[in-house]
Length: 531
Image (cartoon, rainbow, N blue to C red; front, side, top):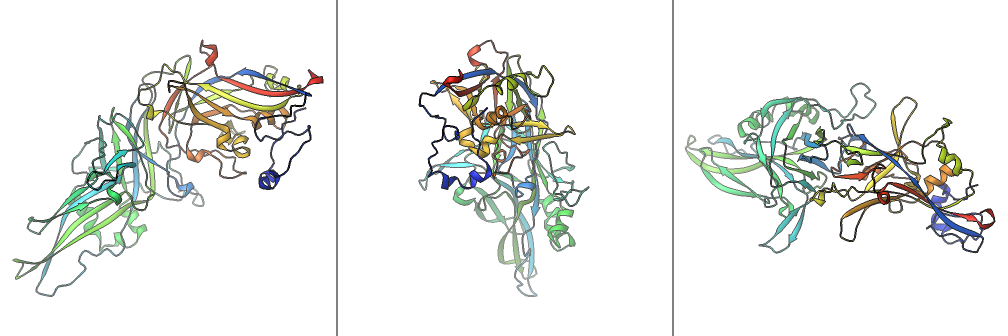
């Protein structure tokens, strides 16, 4: 009979109270730590089981954020092409929010004046994730965070007007929230909004300011403004075609298309920032900082003329800001890797990349629905102290760019329901013990070379050996995303989100190196008189 004690929900609720109690009964073993009673009545041992690992393609992930508060943690833009993994071309699709109190001319100067409005420039600006290197006033410098790939190589970037209507409600079942997956197709106009078409874009940490030349109605430059984000944070800055934006947006201010946000969303359905190419880098961008939001700025000047329009009486600078807001989503175009997975390894890649499936405790040769190794283990009177899975990195497939290696992987039950629909569920240890105890972080060698990932799944194995469940689906291992982790003690569903594009190659059970085969290690105790 198994004696490993699993915390129930009540135990979780009253943990703070129970921590002050000492339970000396030898029959009950809690899962606080891994130590056991050492009074001469028990001996400790461990056993190792080989794990079968296979590769599984990830076709798509949810990319809109509608069911998690409307925002993804990060949005990806750019190209990442590594011959060992799928090529990813990541584009951003977003609605725009109309500014409040849009008025081209704020002040009337009299019947003898003429006001001429001219567009100075239109800029699409998206803040980078950046860290300040120096706080010196005249020597501020930044490093761009969360970029993988070759930043010295450009990718092709264009901006299009979206023609697909984005709805927050499911069009076939309006009572449900809509979902936009990473492989969604979007209709867009063929005309490009960016001034320099097919822009060859490379990230640049020096892009901390944009300069807007203010012009009179005659085209004469009368001032130059410096446009910056808070703390001069560097940003992507893409000039848009002034005449086209004037036609599509500026000239529509006083029409029914701007009567409400809903009317505007129907008229101007958003933009698509499209990345293409075979080289370049992939940027992870934050859209949820109130001081650093992505936006389109229309900078224009009202020139007030008198004397029949021959003399300049006044100039008024204005800027109207359209935030990239509302429904925002990613589109990932993926191309299969140039090299197929090797006989001895399995690629792990975030977003809509690939994952691993693990078969633990062997096959069900007698076809009774329970793996044979598990059946045998249930006949033993083991007290489980610890159970862990270790998977090793294929060190022959490690890229020089260590920033592209995931620091942590996630393990879960990769099951399907009776209808064949995938129903991924949490390993119980994430709920009873927490992410820090389960682990899954990257371990490195003494020479700082990526070596392995280890997951502690003591409670899950204890449940299986105790016979509390016969449900033993394959275990999935994929790149960790913040949305993977449970939010409460009753949150067992694993959500289909991932915006972490990092990748690593793991060894499977076919490797010839016995010491680096994936393994399940179970540490247990047994009463001395039962040996």
